[in-house]
Length: 240
Image 1 (spheres, rainbow, N blue to C red):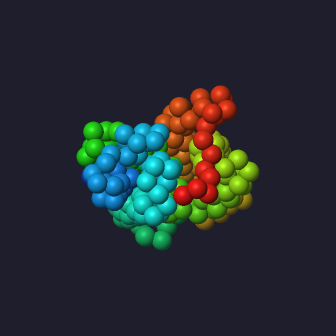
Image 2 (image 1 turned 120 degrees about the vertical axis):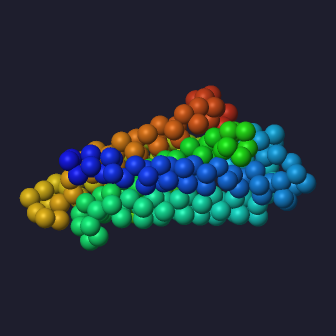
Image 3 (image 1 turned 180 degrees about the vertical axis):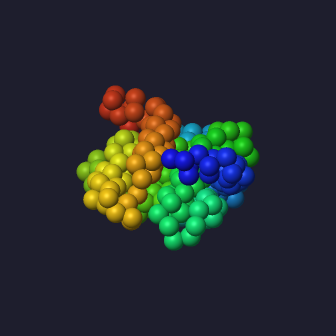
């Protein structure tokens, strides 16, 4: 805990740079950019559901633009998370558990800010997407075990329901739960009395970050949740 407090005091510039870079990268909304390029300057936010994200591009513009959207939205988050992890890991001695934990904190901070940027992009009037793809990218880089569990859950739900928003909301709920289970029961508890043990702070911070991210995704899906409850949410079909 003392080391973490010292980091907050001495690593202030890493925190600021990580947050700003993450947000600015997240604000590059490829759903908006790609739609403007391929569909004569049309705004994806005035089409279909009005959401600047992969699903609306798929429904309103087509498969090709949707593929480019998901790939570039994923990559921007990967870049942000890698930068955050690198900056934070430089604070502690390399090769130590503390360095690994700090890197993890940096990844989560960068990922959170990237997701917020995607949802509220400074370049596009603060009206963006819902952060599902950017959240998936954060999972993949920060905690691959959680990513595998969550992506498997999403694919199962989508295969059954054909509703992307249903899988997204359920996975957002399960994200902090899965993170806690892995960090506490796999990383912390079995090694609690060894030099390789992660700290309880690592468990708490990781879980809190993912809880906050999950809440952001759920809040952005408010209208989808209402349609799911009403039975009016659209399914993805093979038309396009």
